[in-house]
Length: 180
Image (cartoon, rainbow, N blue to C red; front, side, top):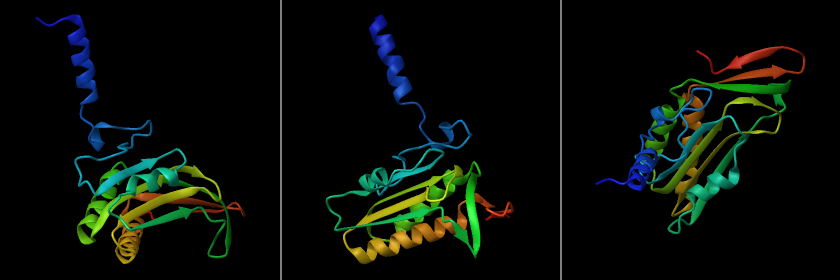
């Protein structure tokens, strides 16, 4: 016989174990919102695309590993100048497939380098000069591996992630960067 308490606990357990895949979780903007992807290799600790400000401490903490002797963190910020033009601000827009592409990039880096942990966050929405736009971090046994993996992660992410930048210049002009 199932009691009311067991039914409630069972319903709560079902909610807790519901499909947490990237496609099952979405933000108000329609972007998948995993904060941890356990179905991906244990090396990949944190991947996300967020509208709210990013935390360096969160990304750093995610890659800490007692077997690692090196942690490399890259922080990309909104600069006030681009090719000699004064930037007033910018906005990032992500394609719904961006989180899946981010996962693919992270997996490729994890398969290529002897690393202990990897994390990456990218911001979307409107950002001001000085705001953090992207943070990637890698930990490994040795610094050379951490440097190489972190560079591959940020370079590949910037080259292939379907996230587009709309730059607004102080002279009133604007441009889209990274659009097809």
